[in-house]
Length: 194
Image (cartoon, rainbow, N blue to C red; front, side):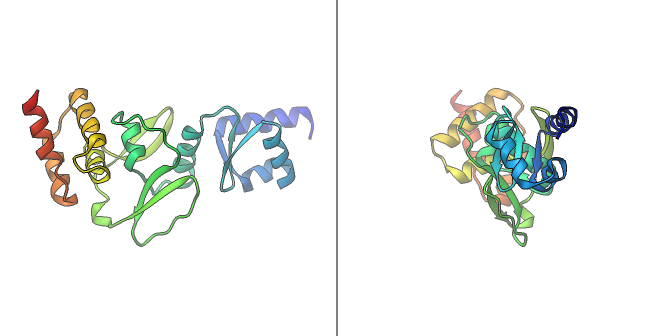
């Protein structure tokens, strides 16, 4: 591979941020060359046949994988809490929801199979330049309740939500009814205590 060709290839990879092994084989010619580029630090192996440009944050790289290769999934759980600023947990695996009748196996994700009726409150946001499908912030609060019912993590998320200042009680009530959560009760108590 000539230096000029290598520059073009690296420029393409940098632009894409993340690429799958078949795409990289097409660029580099074979699997061994892709492995060499990862060993010398030109590429960063993410796992499951995905590679990112060197220096890209692994969390952001995993979000790019979701957006680019799995556009039908919805970011959920602790990952959604983190993206919405309701939690500060370190995210090792990206939480994603898919329809119960679908299947997805990928070591980068923590996959939750969900009843299609509960796939509500989905919105698209841009996070650090990456467009993703994610539950809206109120639906994410319902996830927080399910993860830690009336526990400290839920209350931290609730307080951060209140502090953000755009409280949408109608949505919270709707999600409580559909998802069988009690976010509204705790929100009212929290607002009464302030």
